[in-house]
Length: 367
Image 1 (cartoon, helix red, strand yellow):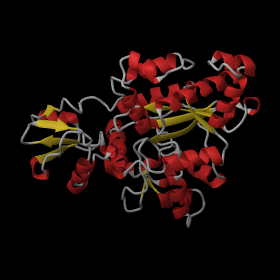
Image 2: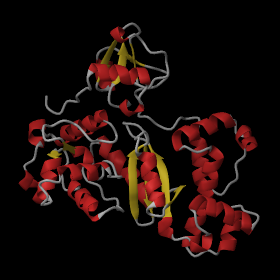
Image 3: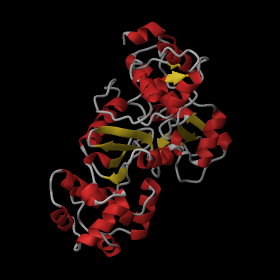
Image 4: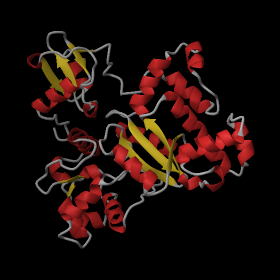
């Protein structure tokens, strides 16, 4: 049956299982013959011997083979924010100007050390740093809407204007009087079947969408800060709400195109490549050489590859649909296994046979 999900090589899956590689969550499940249980690759339980393990491309396949889901890693649920931390995140979103201390967390029945570790793992910052930055994000929104510096400082809980200015400068690199709504790059965490993604959007549109474990993510954020002058702050806006909703539909197989507004800072050549990527049809596959020829630069396949790799908006700008001329799945920052998963998902939901996915160049012009 065409469109069936392909598994990575067994040796690759064994390595991912042993190392608890988050890039493989959702790509396959691990089933243990001796226990009759199947798990995520990242399950924290003690790892079984490789000879006792078989792999399935989906939880449905594992269930049909007679295995039961693990009660520890819960593979039937898409990777999501743990239940114990979710109420805290909801409270922060509902009232980002509230002050939180370790004592406040303890009174709410939460271990401050456990909270700190989770935020450090997921966001690379401590809980208290996150909350302070969230308050500065709220301040940016209020300043952009015309509020004065004095009333903004008081509204978000600062007792002194100097304290507010110091916190604002530390978070944004500028003063409240010099800020611009476009310099605030708000970010949030989005859960997907392939693991959490980080989305970042300014007032005009989505700027970044990457898997949270992408190795180049830190460098991309540094470039957005240093080269383009953004202040990266936790928060929400309409573009982040839009991409979260559209990603949910995409992974459910009910959406093939995206409407979220995009902001893509980069060179003229990079933007020409990214614009062309958006014309590659859902479920189709093209090569770097084909894109180079379409751009009128037949010898620039390597440069196209570099521009492809610098795409910051995964899935929406579908760099996963570009492969080597021989069909090899190369050059995807989210990992080869995720790239295969995305291609299989699109071809399956679109009813496209893999051989039909290699669209001729002329089709790109009329897509």
